[in-house]
Length: 406
Image (cartoon, rainbow, N blue to C red; front, side):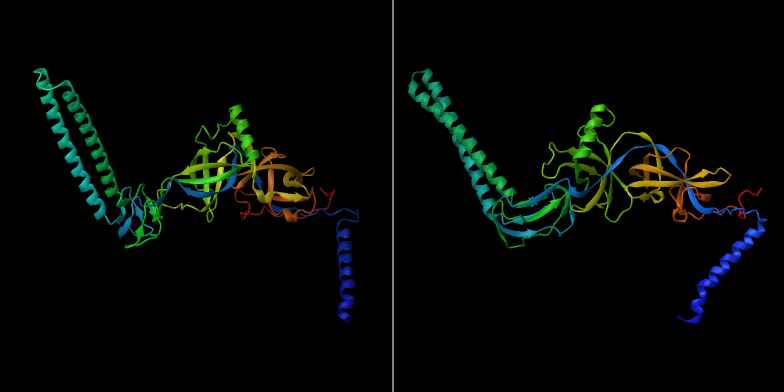
């Protein structure tokens, strides 16, 4: 150890002792104790307002309608009529299948209908003639009965031929594969010249865009609480009411999108202790894409009065949470008063205080680290509760005065 470092600590102690003696002399030798100068801290008045509790869940965006496009008849694909990933209207042509075989079948079926109708007309004419002749006893009753049966069979043949024609025309129509819903297409999995069969394979998929669903799992405790409130009449069940939801995507702060509940499942999954639920959101700009992660807030209670503070003001002491409040001191000014608190849910960037604070309390929201013990003198600077780090104007400086001095 060098000589300067050996004498540095004793010198510092001597200076501190000298300063202490000087202060004692200034006090007139009465042994007065110096007061600690007040600590500047930002304080904000507790926010009191009527709120609704919102419960937060995680979910996924889902399409209201999602369709696999499959062929209904077999044949070779002759054309693909859409751009992959484009938005199409309901009824838009997507694929065509070679229809020559189906046009021929439809033409043959039309000919069968014409033939059956001709036989029916002939049978009706023969029956009418037989009815005239039987009155003149020119034909027997047995022959008349045969003519009647032939007319009935001719009517049945017409119905059968028309059914075959309808089937042939349906098959011909199925060679033109159209969009059953409006939405966005996926990739075309097969191209021109590919052979397909009835029902196989999937040619592309189509998802609707507006509105959109957000699906999430609610925990068992929340579900039981909602049921209890529904029975008490303080909050309607989401099965019977369009309870509001707020939604945010992964890159968004807050919950900027609003929707409504449309479905709650009929059973709790015993494996996870959760129940499936779904909300609906408008999506006119196509912001929501199926499969996206989403944060969901569901209205969890009716309106009630609450006290709110910024979460930054809350400190932790083992299993307790507490805040400092700027309270009037006995000799004037303000001192730090510790208050243990019980917190509730987050509300618009603040947190609800269930127990521990009163309306009008001025909570320290910035500068808590400078408070070393309860009762420390404070110089409070008022700031908004939702902006605890605002730079506020300092109060007029006051000189430290010895205790007991007027």
